[in-house]
Image (cartoon, rainbow, N blue to C red):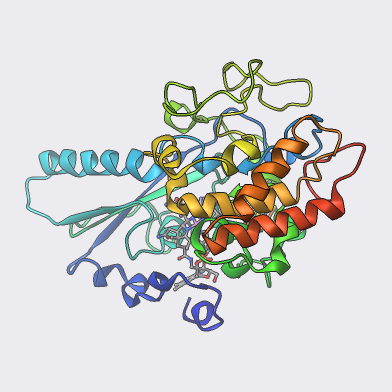
Length: 372
Ligand code: B12
Ligand code: SF4
Ligand code: SF4
């Protein structure tokens, strides 16, 4: 961990330098136990890799990472952890201290999960559970209670079952793994689209494909996720944006009603252009700040902020190779020209980049959604 930080792999995520992350006792004096939870968020919808080949011939779609499709996981899981603490207060007679975190505390959650016996830290750096795969949100409760450990003394944590596989390392479009088990966050699309507030370095833009929020590729290709069970929590299913939920939004065309999110066309693409599952890029890039706040209330997407989402959608549009013959081509070019004239230099520069790229890559035939 200190070496990872010293190499600069944390980028601008300064909170990762907090020395308390190395020892839970730095977070809560007298800590004796750490309870770790893993919540399945695999919603019943296709993988990004399954959509990549799909060519709808229509408006280009972006990819929002699975973890951000539904309700914000922090807001969904933290109340459950606090309810568990309340229940523990009823069960245990003795007074005790406890702190619950989902992603937000100075805790290396995957490491805690590993030593709680929940799985192994894989070559893609995710925690994988042999039965559940890696579509898991982790949560921790640090407490002064002395609880019986889930692993008996001396019992090793789950064995590393990556074996000789290197699928995730090979599939990463931005080559974010300098070596197996180590991620250079500065190269990771998840960092670039969500954490980085400034311009996205040009060297990564074309490799980002249609990603707008996060990236799922190194998990999509993992064999341990092939049979991962589907979550029972409806909260993590893709949010469907209806004119009602998005108050101020007008329908782009009469044909675009809002069918159920899981209704897909022959190419496996959702019918609803306004689901958070493979949403239409022109819609995302054209959102106003108030629309963004309305639509992404209680959604993990809000972390990227409005200008971050528009910046990312510009890059994805630039990568879309939307055909000049596509009905949406003129509308997309107009939108990008408007954004290129924005007073916000971050947005205008990314829109200009997209226009420039489209002028070189748009073709008069097919329009694959991702660069090859
Ligand atoms: C910062 C962060 C990111 C950064 C950096 C990711 C990274 N790999 O470090 C970015 C923005 C890139 C990111 C991306 C994602 N993240 Co994130 N992220 C975090 C966060 C806040 C901290 C992670 C961290 O400490 N990284 C620092 C490095 C050093 O740790 P590491 O790579 O995990 O592992 C090192 C240590 O384990 C160490 N190590 C190994 N053994 C030992 C033993 C000892 C004793 C010590 C000291 C160290 C050590 O060596 C490893 C390699 O250097 C955690 C939440 C939390 N508080 O823990 C969520 C978390 C890891 N993220 C999560 C998720 C879901 C994602 C994404 C899938 C989201 C998305 N779809 O876009 C991607 C996955 C990308 C990937 N392949 O990791 C989940 C992971 C769930 C899981 N099954 O693993 C977490 C746990 C959030 C949560 N509460 O559920 N994330
Ligand atoms: S999330 Fe995407 S960019 Fe990040 S390491 Fe995985 S494959 Fe690479
Ligand atoms: S894709 Fe292969 S190497 Fe990567 S995490 Fe999964 S099993 Fe491990």
